[in-house]
Length: 431
Image 1 (cartoon, rainbow, N blue to C red):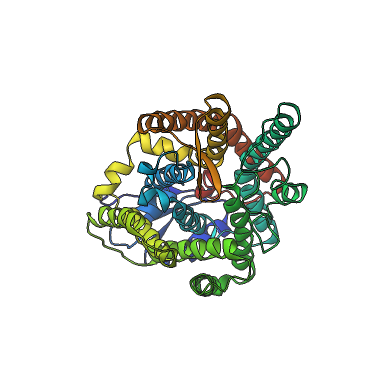
Image 2 (cartoon, helix red, strand yellow; image 1 turned 45 degrees about the vertical axis):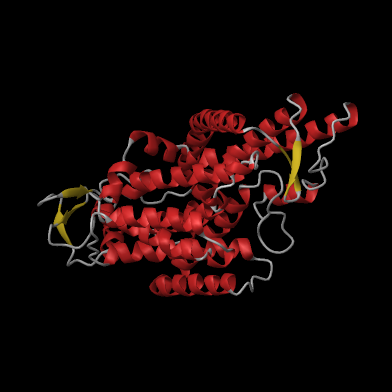
């Protein structure tokens, strides 16, 4: 983009100071714009890449990253589908759980770009954490209630109809203690947690919510050394994971490692003139696919953090890369928009379909690991997969439209009312 000039209207000198602190003046020329604010001139000679330009054009979302999130969520869906036929026991599907690690890196990258220089007071921190709550909790609460209904249905089926679940008893695994932990988002924090209770995918938002709080507290209290602390947290978490010295905090450490690696990736992309080949992002994408498919042991799981960080950096730094063209397809950007609902809804849909196979269709079952699993023919599995994905996408679209989006918007309005924070361009969408 040759010689373009983007206007930025901040609310007072503090807004300008925030931006200038993030990017040195040798990359930004401040041009007076009357009494309403200032303009920032991003010159072609500066090293600020197009991703950062995008943020300060008021478009907080980087669509390519949303598409990556959507594809990752879909792979998590396939990972959680029971092994209805041994022929579909595929390496890349077995490793699908590692896409949650990629989510953590993505989250760190996006949050750092949006908030690393915008939490300067206790009020800012409360607003930030409330917005994260508004982003995560409504959909979590919805599917937690769905799972409470499932437990009631299991109890009625067992007590009144004699239908006994071969894998769980009503309100045993999903106990009152587990329910309280789910309500307060602490189910995956520490050895006393119940991370796989109720809606299993919610374990990741449990650890992510409190990771946000750690991030915000560091930015507020120790802004000058925040990147050093992020580096130490990432390295310490990785070391504890690799050596299996987690002390019951393994889930939290997975999030800390990924999130702060994402933060450091964002810092690197902001500050360094990265010049990647256009094919690099496509090569890294293929490397991730190959790694997931041929990975032989969980000992190598930490590699996904590095691959994820490199993929994100290459996609953001080279906007005309070969992979970017694919990631900008409308179908993939839509999938990214509903990805959170896909992630949070799919296990419930799988549970219902499994009960239909077990109770209605009377399919034979086999012990796969420690779970009794209905067995289907190849054709039946293909039909079941297609039906499952279709139902998940429809439910996700409805949840995103009628629950996630309106309640997220309401949380923004409440935040603006309770904490009159400065309105930066990036804050319009990234919440």
